[in-house]
Length: 327
Length: 296
Image 1 (tube, one colour):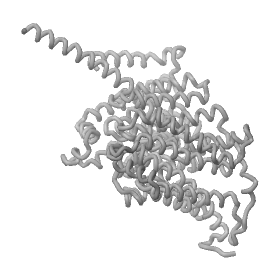
Image 2 (image 1 turned 180 degrees about the vertical axis):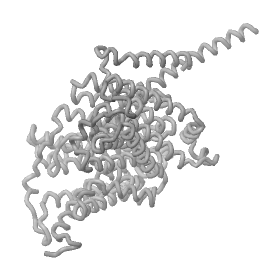
Image 3 (image 1 turned 135 degrees about the horizontal axis):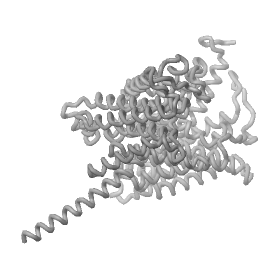
Image 4 (image 1 turned 45 degrees about the vertical axis):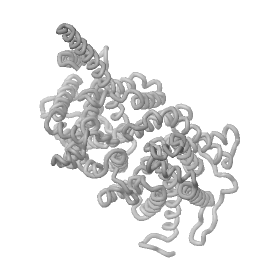
């Protein structure tokens, strides 16, 4: 995508996001906060899928466990939100390191099945732990006061708090992907044996990618627990892992922020078509099938491809013109 | 009263027998997954959904057409197998040659559509399906009373696994299948219709899942989500056993069913997670799986 276009789109999007809480009659701010959480979740997930070429089918484990631990610190321990969020992120990162260390012993399709099975293990743990209230989930989690200054019970404060944290986290993801570390991840994706032969400790890189991806997914989970004041089994269930895969696939896994677009579209589908009940699942499944069959680059990927072909067309025309001129 | 490690013998044998029944289902399902993966190279996430369809079709046959268990055990796998053939021809065929990850994602999308469809049509709550008269009641095995139907399930699973093994290892069709697994292009060059083999294999694999579903209908709640809960466990079993070997998949399935049953006796809180824990240990000790050949 041309840089100027990306910048102007980003600026317009940011302006729109800043205006949202002042026009609640246009769009429901809580819905926008949900989109921001899931966008962060999907972009974090894409560090593994898009950049490293690893399909984790268990990312709900990181999202959900962080939501639970954040909720536990706020509700059961009465601690402040900064400590609760930190707990959520750290626990998700540790879980990511553990699951990553086990899962990366295999690759490809097996890795996907292993992460799915391990996330199911995490699911059953949260089903059984005494303070998670099993099927009811943790409800009425207090939001608290961030660093003793920002009262998150105020709707507008909460909105800008979530907006700023999400933007910071997305900037961090952008930084990670464009760092030398990100280059190595892509080298592993493209040709793992060669990356290994160049002397990179591939296993350690993969586990670190898992840890970072899980920690950032955990940040999304903690924010979710604070916004909705709920942490439930739905957050750790494999259907959540499936949703984040679809968001990433739909948005475009070869772009940094494409998954965020996918997250917005899928959450909009769930939000605005909620009245259709079970039909929504069928639609989501159909979109999934269509994405895999015909739309593997995702929306952003297809747009980029369309733009580059148009540009290369004009470029080759220019070249022909200049050749004609010399003749 | 005889106790073993402080557990009454009756409770122990009872749970072991229950474990064998569960293991029989794991065995038939992971067998089907292994066959499909071997030839079609797709990890069939929809295996659980087809299992659920088998159970649901037998329920619908009984409630709408008054066709009982013995009819369903033939009709349901045929319907589901035919559907599998259509799915392979229309959907799966388009993604051969791509990363196998896409096969997993495609079949996951199918799970959402199939389960969602049944939930819209019949609700999320479970339906009750009763076993046929001939298989009701229990027999005294000397050390415990065993419901006849559960004995029947164990016997049926043994027959299914044995027949599948014979077909693959001892018939000319099986020889072609094995050839197509090892060297699809070379097999094709010998004039064997490999694409047709792939279609039939997928159809037969999901028909096996449906057959397991029919067998499960009388002892489980027939509900739209009954398959997806199972398929995650079967995936773990497949990781433990390795997808490379068909008999390995069946043996691992049976073994883990028994281990799960034993866990229920000694530490029931862990019974839902024991399979996943064993998978984690196997990955640490022997990453390729117990029967695995290649690193994949």
